[in-house]
Structure formats: structure tokens, C-alpha cells
Picture (cartoon, rainbow, N blue to C red):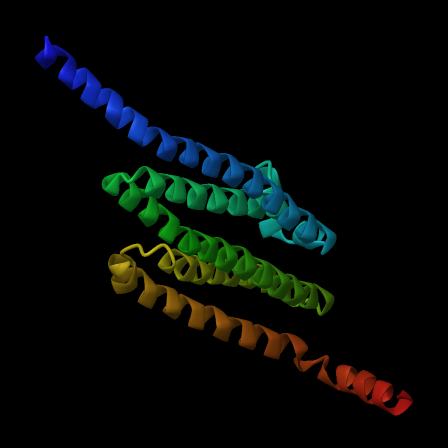
Length: 223
């Protein structure tokens, strides 16, 4: 009879010993959930007050993000939330003293900064590219330079590609094939596009250069 109850008693003893750890883990998860929501909302409100979303709506990258049903403020809200959630999960798992699960969650948490860097580089790079290309395109339209719209479109695509490569590096992906085959071609295309822009601008502004210089000198005299 004793042999029958010994395994049950041992199991009950282990459950009782494990119960405080389980309660502590649950409390940690609840605190992490609350803290993640609060900090995520704070980050979202700060970005919203800084006018980040309004500035992004003026760029094509921001318009694409808006079409996806989210915005930058909401995106960083989710990133902050899940970063706090994962830290809470890692802490809770550590309290439970399950080595395999602790290692898995720790690896996920350690990868979060790479994802954040990927998003920041991608978004910031696209915004800067859009600003520069919109400026060049408006200048070409003002000066009525033929073929300048197509050139800026190709240059925009090329710069998007470069920024995407730089962003993907943050995810620790193996980009050896891209570097070996695509990057040299892309740089060649980029140099060709840059030279074409210089030539088009040079020929397009050749006849207008005296007029532009007169305007510039006139402004300098007035100042």
C-alpha cells in the first residue's frame, strides 16, 4: 500500500514546491503586460505629438505604411509592448527554472534590437530618399528638363534597394548571394543613373544658367 501512495506523495510534494515559482511567474507576467501597454502608449503619444505620422504622410513610404492599416506611432507602440512582454516572459521562465525554455526565450529577446534597427533604417532611409527625390523631381519640373522624371524614378528604386540591403543586414541574414551578383550590377546602374542626371541637368540648365545667375546675384544685392 505504501508503494502505491509514495509516487502520489512525491508528485504532491513537487507540486507544492513548484507552486511559489508558478505564482511568482504569473505575477511577473501580469506586471509585464501592464508595463508593456503603458510604455507602448507613452511612446506612441510622444511620436504623435512630435508629428512623426504627419511628416511621414507626405512621403511615399509613409503612404505605403498608412495603406497597410497602421502608422509609425502604432508600430513603435507594438515594438515596445512586445519587447517588455518578452522580457517579462524571459524573467517568468527563469523563475520557473526550465533551462531549455529559458534559452529559447533569451534568444528571441536578444534578437529584438536587430528587428528595431531593421525597421528604423528602413523607414528613415525611405523617408530621406523620398525627400531627396521629390526635391530633385520638383526641380526638374520647374526647369522643364526632359526625361528627368524617369531618371529620378530609377534612382529612387536604386536607393530603395541599397537601403533595403543595409536594413536586412541588421537581421543577420546571409546576403552572400546578393553581394556577389546583385550589388555590383546595382552600383553600376547607380553610377549610370547619376551620370545621366548630371548630363541632363547640365544640358537642361545650360541655356538657363545666365538667367539663374542673374536672379541669384539680384537676391544677394538685395540682402
